[in-house]
Length: 122
Image 1 (cartoon, rainbow, N blue to C red):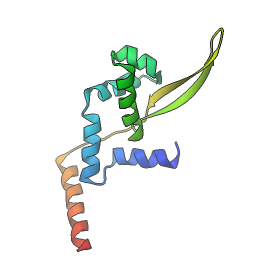
Image 2 (image 1 turned 60 degrees about the vertical axis):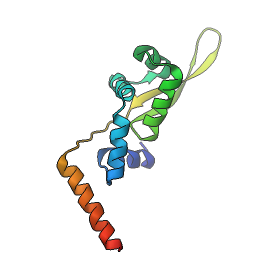
Image 3 (image 1 turned 90 degrees about the vertical axis):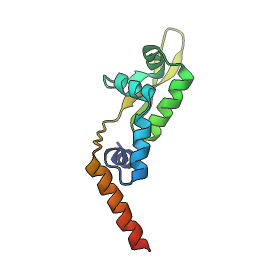
Image 4 (image 1 turned 180 degrees about the vertical axis):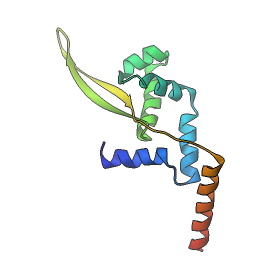
């Protein structure tokens, strides 16, 4: 995992603003994305496997995976394979370990920090 991945993961595990927290909750508040996370819990899957397993069209699943990947929840890699007549490239996705605990204290702490920062800037 490179520095970019660590930064993205830190945002998910420890949101530093109410805006970041709201974004995470929005991402995780979609049923299809939650199904993707559940399916990837057991290991890497190709997008075609996910599509068939979840009963979600390839184009729609691709959009959800792009969203999850850009927010550091999943990552993807390409794999080169061969069959009897040709070589092919497939992209597989895997879950990035994350944990988020939302509590009234977390929300209050972030809000109070933002309020203090705003007052300092005045």
